[in-house]
Length: 190
Image (cartoon, rainbow, N blue to C red; front, side):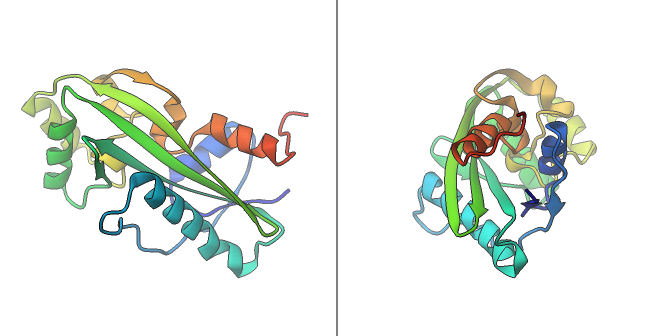
């Protein structure tokens, strides 16, 4: 079955390749802002499905179209991708010494059917010193990352522990994806 990934995220493509898949990548061009008063589950559902539909309707009715969106939630507020270095520093300062939740909404579209699920992972950060944040920001790794960090990069040293799927924090929950495929009767490994 042809797999199409409606995402510009190189990490999502790499994670699918990690499990032996070679998706065609076609990023969706949609607005990724939460609506006023929108709950996080509704936001992720709306965005993940909208990304998929934006690509799906083009020519992929018979392909398995995969779309996802990842956010960080702290104290009930969503933390998306930083627009600037200063905003990234502010995000990391807020996460310092605290536990936050990483949520990824995952949608699969195939032949008129859409399935959706959310993966949730708790992440505990160590107390961060201003110098640590500054050093991290100098490397530019925060760009295009929900919460301004990449767990698989230099920010790995900020993480004291996680509860849940590590790959979810990278932006694509492989176990959830595999289970969703199984529910559709698709078995990657025989």
